[in-house]
Length: 319
Ligand code: TXA
Ligand code: MG
Image (cartoon, rainbow, N blue to C red; front, side, top):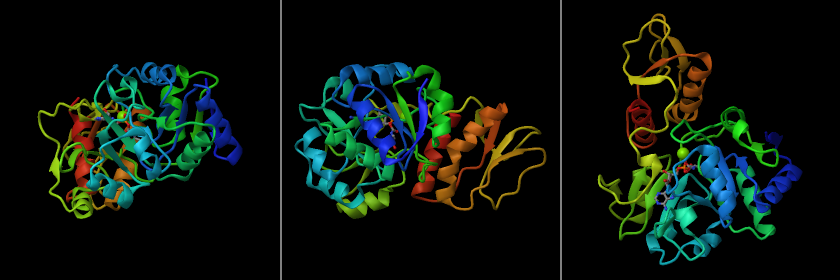
């Protein structure tokens, strides 16, 4: 079982060393916690799959410390993708690019594309820099949850979910609660224009503005394999239903302006869209911890981040 460590400079260098030696390190990002491994180490990356019980063949995002590392992992990068990286990194956006030779099949799921991201979190960036000083090139990290489950937004949630599958030499870095709370926007940059595969805090409008191109949303019959694109995903054990028709003992999530129906167990009352994103997954997890079996939820209205939240609620309720 791994230990949870506070993020002192010493703990971060211990974690970087653990990664370099082929162990797994769960670490905070601004979106959700990631389960990291040396992205060039096939054995370490394979362990991520077994710990998560993730079907093989799903690609993992490679986290890098800065835009300067982009051309280590990718090539033939379109100009608009460089602009997106300049405008939004470090930040909650993953770019799918033509892979370089470094990005092996065990990272890309056998595709010719690789997903890259510079996270905007002090601990993640310090870990990446420390790892690079030891000769590391990138950290492969999916969200630190079991396949299909809700992404963790605290170290405690990672511990609860994965500790019994991790080894003594693996680590969990505690960097507090994630500030964004839902996963990064994923943008396919392998065409002449950006295609959003997964909505997130970097919105369609922001991508449109930065790239000055028409942005497409995920294509229905996309050939790319992305587990976050499955309809049923990001789901708690409790059944999630989009409805305000609540029965006694059911969980309830809605904006704070909406009153709690009689007999409902209020799981979250966000005051703004950002708080909705930040609290959604911890509210789902709270429901499971409390043994609540059904959650009624009123999704937020509006464009941008609200759209990303509706996407996750839809996926959670499709199971
Ligand atoms: O915010 C995030 O993106 C978090 C933090 C830890 O960075 N990571 C995350 O990873 O959500 P994961 O693996 O749980 O979700 C990433 C999604 C998956 O659905 C994966 O299939 C897709 O991105 N993906 C990764 N590389 C890809 C690629 N080369 N082509 C298409 N999809 C890719
Ligand atoms: Mg995930």
